[in-house]
Image 1 (cartoon, one colour):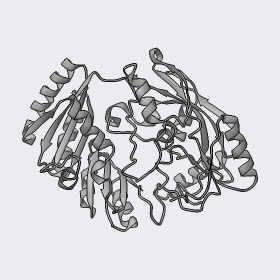
Image 2 (tube, one colour):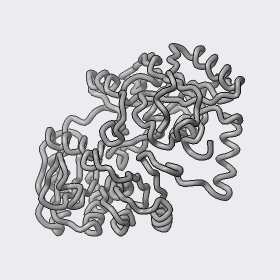
Image 3 (cartoon, one colour):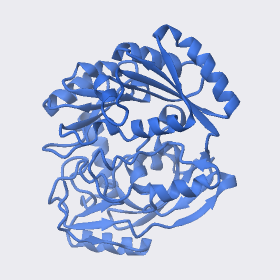
Image 4 (tube, rainbow, N blue to C red):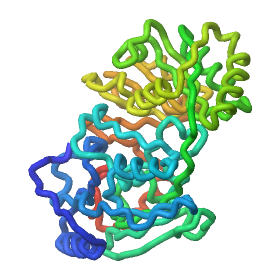
Length: 391
């Protein structure tokens, strides 16, 4: 994890960010870029950077047009504040960004810029898409010390579309964002969750795929095997499979009844009301069952149809996104985890601090393409050295 002894620089404007990046890069020094600092353990080797640039001072909401479903803000705005603002107008961040503060033992408060830079999405990803799908535009400072912008402030804007996809998931290694524009959506009036109990991982995968492929408009599908279900806060007596439905009350009730009939072959089924459903999915989003466990933590991205096969890895698992996202607690050798996940058609990210890269090393044409992109934005390797690869 990045050392805490480096005092953070707190710019208050885009011009101050520009000056800091330009001066630091010209001096041959490197910068750790953080928002709330809650995910510094992910791919950040100690001592790789000489300067810490915190975007916590860039925390203003610049423009919010509820009728247009568009919001522009500085990247340091806290997610909690932003979600409260949207809730006042009956709207939400549809990609349901997770915090993971307890899970990763982080300090500080998660920010909008951090969620976009890491492309973080919660359980609703199966219906609403990833964070990058709600990212309309931005202004930033590249590692070259140059200001630039991409995208726009209208939902149908196409200009710079690929640029947003590029920035989302780059973990601050290409540029420092100083302003972001996102799409927001109306919040559902209510929700309900159907629960199945005692299913094996393979059988749960079948149930989740049936629900996701049905016309029920499922907005969450997760499976907690015995270990995860038995841990706080759920403390269930057996494996638990959950399917969420959201929308207007009449629609949710009708879809829940129809889906319950379709799932009746999977055994006993219970239903959570709106309040208990919200609590349950907050626990899934934050992976609370794994918080505090000392074992290395992995985040596996897999084809949903084969995600359940991650149970063959040593350790404990928890499934989200219908099996497309698997959380793994395992002391297995990193090379073994990565190879097994690659054989299943996915990739693995080590979320807890440790020796070796957090992200799977790139090879062949993909590595060459990544190097060209990095050279275009940050040829001297000024920004977040070592976070996603070699420092």
